[in-house]
Image (tube, rainbow, N blue to C red; front, side, top):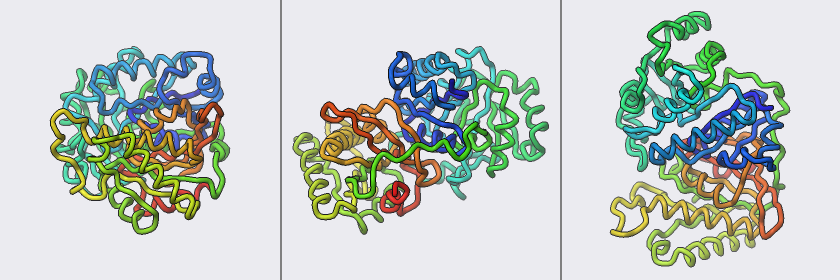
Length: 428
């Protein structure tokens, strides 16, 4: 029976948290949606044997009502597995819109659990995300001054978490500062127990890993915590050193990089990848004109690359520079972001049919589209590539047969510049 149930608002966030849990000794299963956990099928059986189950949703940018409904369904499935402690995982850059979905989902989960209060902890120092005086920093920049300011889906124009969260929640939003956290577990526990925090969402400062350990210990009795994957650093599972899933593929198996993200980090990774890997940029005009033919051309390109050098995975990417972004969608046309997701998901399906057994996908929305299109129901977390990024083993049905495939679902903002060329070393 799992000890912990988690709900992640996108697919890369789910593997991000699962990677952290595996490192802390939890045998962890990522379930793609909650549906497979409610019946006595392979996904439910695998989940019941895990220490932690993370439900991956595609709810970060969904309409509020859909995000709440999907999150409550995930909570119900996790409760049915026997979970008693829960973790709502969102991005360390607090990606959201003025309406949500972080606040509305947190409110709904608390209501369903019969709880009144929880913490808000997006800090993840290993990836440069810290909170000080309730202000969120990305490395040494305030969130609103970082590249997240111009994110195409969730532009973050404020750095103050209280101002961001208050319009999204029915509960008061409070703050506990770094001085209280640094005073230790007892001091933080007493602060959280104070009347002003009893029915609130409390933003807790954290700038170092030790701060997260203190917060994790002080909140161990809470049924629900919320935050980025960094908060898991204070947890301890029962299988330290033995929780990692084995790789599915072998050196020499065909692979590919599918990059749909437009983030600054991914653009830098694309630039490096173009110097070292065969590459092809998605052509939006061709995708609008004849998507089937455009996808077929991308797949043919990848297969030709494998024939020339199986050890160099081709890179299929959507955005190399900000000039590539489509600012005005032609009237009556599908938005570029959706077109890219569909195209890369279709490429993934055809590449796996053609023999690919290792795929690195960049971008949260792209990862969700690809994983769903491939029909993966669960992911077993394997070797870590970078903070928040790991290879995951998926069992897919390919032309009637079951095939094991390695997937790496990378948040657009995660990983160093060389990740598209170095990630494969972790599978050796």
